Structures are given as structure tokens and as C-alpha cells.
Length: 317
Image 1 (spheres, helix red, strand yellow):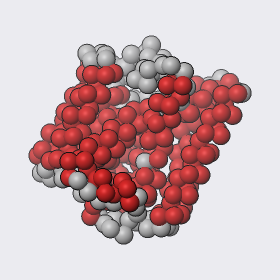
Image 2 (cartoon, rainbow, N blue to C red; image 1 turned 180 degrees about the horizontal axis):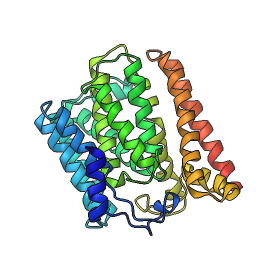
Image 3 (cartoon, rainbow, N blue to C red; image 1 turned 45 degrees about the horizontal axis):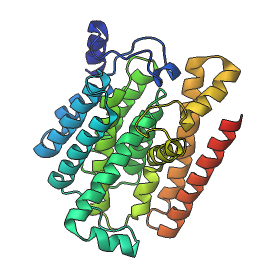
């Protein structure tokens, strides 16, 4: 069903990618439909529509916002961020999302206030949404990253708000199409993906007190680190953090590999494999200690250190 839908969109050139965009040159020079979000939403509608109508409404809204961004109807990053904030704030309320503890006394006192908790949840979701968009520059990188998360949660036998087996099949379909340049996520897909997994993981945090909040942070460390480091990096250069560039870690790794191979698709897939394999190892290690706060904090710190060292080394090369 998904393949037929994607091929139909491909034929009629609906949601075409813009081949001149900074990020797409790392994947293909051809016009590939930005249908990742559309297919994900169709699957969600078919399998999970009855879960919560208002939550579904939020997913629809973030998808539409992504579509408008992909079609260059909302060019202003500030306007997109404003709409994202409204959608995330509404989801935090109707989805009954809350972060019950951070294991930091001062912060826990602040978020014990219900209104402030909603703002904090909104902030966290915004980080994940935009981080997901930032790492969506190579085939299978973003999809593969979240595929690893859902597979890990399945093997850990955690109860999720959505059936993890169905999600795994959905991701396999999307990964195959993305691998062969038959679809890209686009903003519509990366926004929806970030919002969906924010909802899933915050709900998991609320429903299972045995899981450390730092395990959730570990699962989302890469997109979160990408957006936070990008903001700092651009501010240091007096650039707007809202403007796109091609200086993210995955792009630097791609450039390094492509300099040697001169094969764009090979370099693209290899870079995604390297980054996702690293995260797979980290996830497996972290899953053995998912309720040990100190160990998880150490692991997150190591990830940040390795990220920064790798970034600085690649920039000098």
C-alpha cells in the first residue's frame, strides 16, 4: 500500500524535493518526493486512529506545517518555530504529557508546577522535532535512528502507547524506500517523526517509574545534541540559529568519505551506517542500565565528548 501510494505521488510529482537545497545535495540531484510524513501518517491513521483524537489532530497539524515548509509556503523559520510551539504546547495538554522527575532537585521543584511542566515538556519536544529535522540530511540516517529506538524498546518489552511491532514494519517499509531514493522524509516527515517519538517516550517515562529519565535522554541524545550544538555554533559566528547550513556532523563525515570515494550514494549510506551503528552500540549499553542514573549520565557525557572531538577533528581536516 505504501509503495503504491509513494509511486503515485512520484508519478504526479506531488511534494517534489527542491534539488538546490543545501541538505539534498548530500543525497541526490534528482527530484525525489518528500512523502515520508505522508506515508507515516497514512499508516498511523489506519492502525492507531482510535487512540486519541486530539493527539491525532496534533500529528495532523505538525504534518501540515511540514508540508507548508516543504512547499516553501512558510519560508520564515521564526514563523515555523512559532507554529511548532503552539502545536507542542497543545499536545502536552491534550496528551497529558508531563516529565515527572529529572533527578535534579531544583529543576524538579520548578516542574512540580503544572503550568511550568507543560512549558518544559513543550521545550523538550521542540528540541527533538528540530533535531530530527537537522539529522535528516542523509538517506536512512533519521529513519534508521528512530528504527533502532523502536526495536530496542520492543526487545526490552516495554509497554508503549502504540504497538511496537506495527511501528517496526512501518519503518522497514520507509527505510527501503528511502534507501533507494524513492522518498525523502522532508520537513513533514521529520517534524512528524520527532513529535511521534516525543509522545511515545514521554508516555513511557510517565508510565514506568523504573526507567531513568536519563535513559530517555540517551535515546534522544543525537538529535538533541545536533540542534543544541548548532545553536551554540551559529551564535558564536553571529549567525541566526534558524538558518540552515551544511556544517552538521553527518555532513562533515559525508564530505570526508566522499573525498576518498567520489561516490555520493555510497558515501551517503556509509555515513548513515557509521553514525547509526555507533548509536546502536550506545543504546545496547544503555539498555543494560536503564534505571541507573549515574551510569546513564556518564554515557551521555561520553557521547557529547566524542561528538565534540569528532566535529573539531573533521573541521580541521
